[in-house]
Image 1 (cartoon, rainbow, N blue to C red):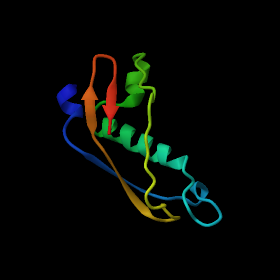
Image 2: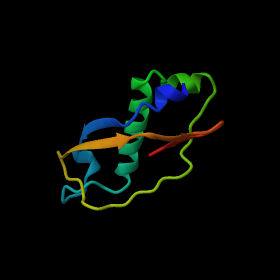
Image 3: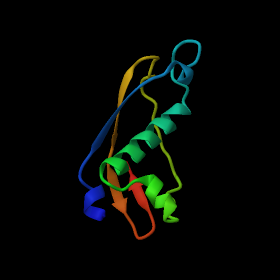
Image 4: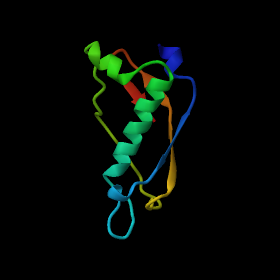
Length: 97
Protein backbone atom coordinates (compact mmCIF):
# COMPACT_ATOMS: atom_id res chain seq x y z
CA UNK A 1 0.00 0.00 0.00
CA UNK A 2 2.95 2.34 0.60
CA UNK A 3 3.79 2.72 -3.08
CA UNK A 4 0.11 3.12 -4.05
CA UNK A 5 -0.44 6.07 -1.69
CA UNK A 6 2.86 7.77 -2.56
CA UNK A 7 2.12 8.11 -6.29
CA UNK A 8 2.70 11.85 -6.39
CA UNK A 9 0.44 14.82 -5.85
CA UNK A 10 -3.34 14.50 -6.00
CA UNK A 11 -5.30 17.59 -7.15
CA UNK A 12 -8.86 17.91 -5.87
CA UNK A 13 -11.21 20.57 -7.27
CA UNK A 14 -14.15 22.01 -5.36
CA UNK A 15 -16.39 25.05 -5.55
CA UNK A 16 -17.03 27.29 -2.52
CA UNK A 17 -20.66 26.99 -1.43
CA UNK A 18 -22.72 29.85 -0.03
CA UNK A 19 -23.09 28.24 3.41
CA UNK A 20 -19.30 28.20 3.83
CA UNK A 21 -19.05 31.98 3.64
CA UNK A 22 -19.89 34.98 5.79
CA UNK A 23 -22.09 37.90 4.71
CA UNK A 24 -19.23 39.35 2.67
CA UNK A 25 -18.90 36.12 0.67
CA UNK A 26 -15.56 35.17 2.28
CA UNK A 27 -14.94 31.56 3.33
CA UNK A 28 -14.93 31.11 7.12
CA UNK A 29 -11.48 29.92 8.26
CA UNK A 30 -12.81 26.66 9.76
CA UNK A 31 -13.95 25.45 6.33
CA UNK A 32 -10.40 25.17 5.02
CA UNK A 33 -9.88 22.16 7.30
CA UNK A 34 -12.93 20.54 5.66
CA UNK A 35 -11.46 21.21 2.20
CA UNK A 36 -8.18 19.55 3.22
CA UNK A 37 -10.09 16.57 4.65
CA UNK A 38 -12.12 16.23 1.45
CA UNK A 39 -8.92 16.14 -0.61
CA UNK A 40 -7.27 13.64 1.75
CA UNK A 41 -10.15 11.17 1.56
CA UNK A 42 -10.50 11.63 -2.22
CA UNK A 43 -6.78 10.86 -2.65
CA UNK A 44 -7.17 7.67 -0.65
CA UNK A 45 -10.33 6.62 -2.53
CA UNK A 46 -8.73 7.26 -5.94
CA UNK A 47 -5.73 5.13 -5.00
CA UNK A 48 -7.84 2.20 -3.83
CA UNK A 49 -7.48 2.79 -0.10
CA UNK A 50 -10.98 3.82 0.97
CA UNK A 51 -11.07 5.54 4.35
CA UNK A 52 -14.48 3.96 4.98
CA UNK A 53 -12.97 0.50 4.40
CA UNK A 54 -10.10 1.25 6.78
CA UNK A 55 -12.62 2.23 9.48
CA UNK A 56 -14.59 -1.01 8.92
CA UNK A 57 -11.32 -2.84 9.62
CA UNK A 58 -10.88 -0.87 12.85
CA UNK A 59 -8.20 1.46 11.51
CA UNK A 60 -8.64 5.19 12.16
CA UNK A 61 -6.65 8.15 10.91
CA UNK A 62 -7.32 10.93 13.42
CA UNK A 63 -5.94 14.36 12.61
CA UNK A 64 -3.25 15.11 15.20
CA UNK A 65 -1.90 18.32 13.72
CA UNK A 66 -3.09 20.83 11.15
CA UNK A 67 -1.23 23.92 10.03
CA UNK A 68 -2.55 26.59 7.70
CA UNK A 69 -1.25 29.89 6.41
CA UNK A 70 -4.02 32.15 5.11
CA UNK A 71 -2.77 34.24 2.20
CA UNK A 72 -5.78 35.26 0.14
CA UNK A 73 -9.40 34.61 1.12
CA UNK A 74 -11.49 32.25 -0.97
CA UNK A 75 -14.82 33.71 -2.04
CA UNK A 76 -18.28 32.37 -2.77
CA UNK A 77 -18.32 30.37 -6.03
CA UNK A 78 -14.51 30.32 -6.36
CA UNK A 79 -13.21 27.07 -7.76
CA UNK A 80 -10.40 25.82 -5.56
CA UNK A 81 -7.79 23.16 -6.15
CA UNK A 82 -6.48 21.43 -3.05
CA UNK A 83 -3.21 19.59 -3.76
CA UNK A 84 -2.38 16.70 -1.43
CA UNK A 85 0.61 14.39 -1.18
CA UNK A 86 1.57 11.65 1.22
CA UNK A 87 4.65 12.97 2.95
CA UNK A 88 5.46 10.10 5.29
CA UNK A 89 4.11 6.62 5.92
CA UNK A 90 5.00 5.43 9.40
CA UNK A 91 4.21 2.15 11.13
CA UNK A 92 1.14 3.69 12.77
CA UNK A 93 0.73 7.06 11.04
CA UNK A 94 0.43 8.85 7.72
CA UNK A 95 1.51 12.44 7.12
CA UNK A 96 -0.43 14.26 4.40
CA UNK A 97 0.94 17.51 3.01
